[in-house]
Amino acid sequence: MERYKKLSDYQAPKPKGQVGTDIDAWCTRCKRMLTHTVLAKTEGRTVRVVCNTCSSEHKYYPEPPGSRRTTSKRKTGSRSSGSKKIPAAARVFEDAIRDKDMSKPAAYHPNTTFEIDQAIIHGKFGLGIVTEVKPRGRIVVSFEDAVRVMVHARG
Image 1 (cartoon, rainbow, N blue to C red):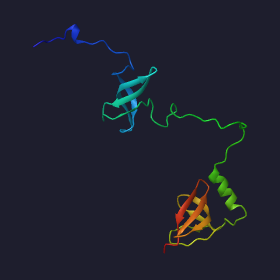
Image 2 (image 1 turned 180 degrees about the vertical axis):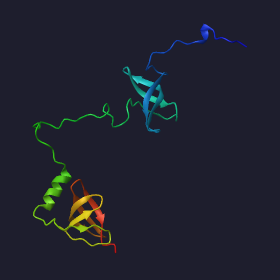
Image 3 (image 1 turned 90 degrees about the horizontal axis):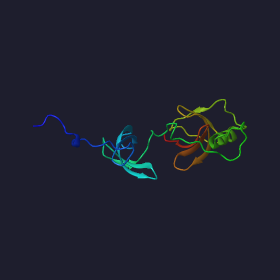
Image 4 (image 1 turned 135 degrees about the vertical axis):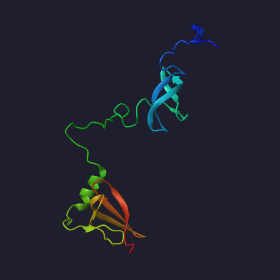
């Protein structure tokens, strides 16, 4: 039984990021930053890794999704710096409520029957207006953030 390791038992450390070395990466299965082993590199960049925790093989993500480094801003043509883009749903909502009485909206409930151009108030989505009545108990409601298809006349 040998007590001490010989110098030949030690391997020279591989440069960081080389194939076969460990690297921190976002695991797509575990949903956490964990230690991964580099499987492949292309043009000097790490492209494929395997998670040391769950053994899943996936693309290399150096940061969690949504972090500053991974999100990119897209340029939207030639806009003046002072103008703001209004979302399409907000424009539809503004057009729908123009010249409508929004002072007394009806509370939304699936059992209630609604008509076109009727103002409703929803507990989660807020103030909306019915823009279309579809067959089989469905209505299209325009809210400030989105246009949604909802049920009605179920009672």
